Image 1: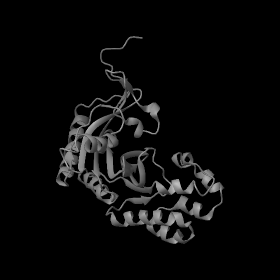
Image 2 (image 1 turned 90 degrees about the horizontal axis):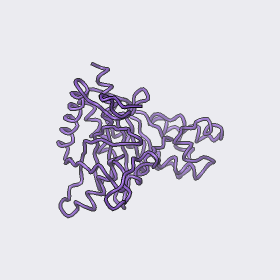
Image 3 (image 1 turned 90 degrees about the vertical axis):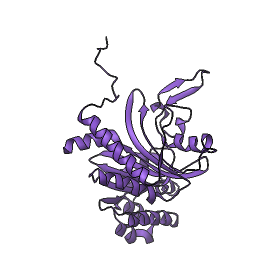
Amino acid sequence: MSIKEHEIPQGSKLYFGKSASLKREIESIASGVLSNRGYEEIVTPLFSYHQHQSISDDKALVRVNDVQNHNMTLRADSTIDVVRIIQKRLGRNTTHKQWFYIQSVYRYPSIESYQVGAEFIDESNLEVVLNDSIEIFKKLKFEPLLQISNINIPKKIVELVDLELEDFRHINIKKMLSLNIDWLTSLVYIQTIEDIDNMIDIVPETLKDELLKLKALTQNVNYKKTTIAPLYYASMLYYDELYFKMIENNFTYARGGRYKTDDVSAVGFAIEVDELIQKLEEGN
């Protein structure tokens, strides 16, 4: 079958007219907010040796080889590469800790998506970057639902009961409820700070501090459309504690969290530009 001259690979992106204008607006607003908050811009290489440390399913990586036949992949995630490059390659030239990027990521076989993201190195307070992302959405005049989670909670639960992390990754509520454990059932239905207060006394001690971290972050963020989801488990390999998503109608517009790589703690987020473009086009 021949490929027509006007065809582009399935999954790749083309921006023109209104979509190109909205893309530029999103980038301009985001870069303005982040620059004003002390971030500097970085553009990481398209090719990487380390993407397997970011992506839980390495089958999603687009693989190539360098001139010495070492394995490389196209950039599938920016977070780990940003931290690694700042710490390992640019460390002698800069002590700056706040960085943002505007660039594409790629998944097998030819799925391209555009992101605006930010990383704050040597920072463990997720509230800082969460407020940065909220400010960007406010300037875009779009208010999706903010979902706050704690990756440590599913990890600790699998040590206590007959569940696996895959049950949390695939949101297997039926299996969780079938165990008939009062505190686990209560966790399934938690959505608010008040819900945490009402059941904190019945959860195992190992979970109490993690729930209180969720409560504190939710209290400190000035955003009305917020829900707590303590059993959510992110598919990225590096997030290890507090985590957030901004969602609406099954679309994810931003995600971020706390993570650790090479013994360096950091917090960061990524905004999904393509989903935002589609949403803003529908609103106009």
